[in-house]
Image (cartoon, rainbow, N blue to C red; front, top):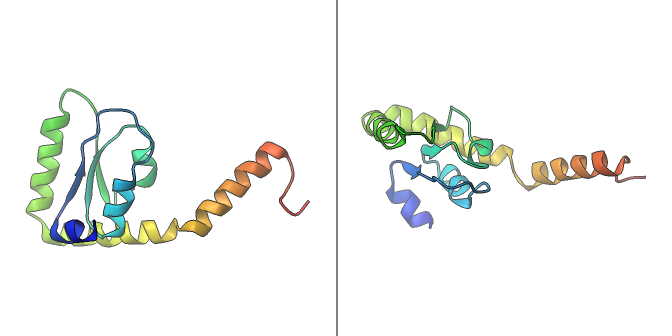
Length: 116
């Protein structure tokens, strides 16, 4: 997949069905590509406005997504900034951060720390 992300200027994830956070979202961000995605399921949880345009899943979704594509197509500097922000976001949410969040959830559920 890295070859395809490298060839792209923008990545779009126009999901219309509820889904967990798709791997495609994280791959695009890690590849430094600005993302346009719909606000379904867990997708927005991995995004910020610095690296993605989140499009509402409504009757105007196709129009709104097309407008976002046009805006990014015409602004190379914005694409660059969003791509860098996406890389940083993925790097900050590495395996250590996921482990720590999971440990905190288990601690909350079990009522004690992992050292107990």
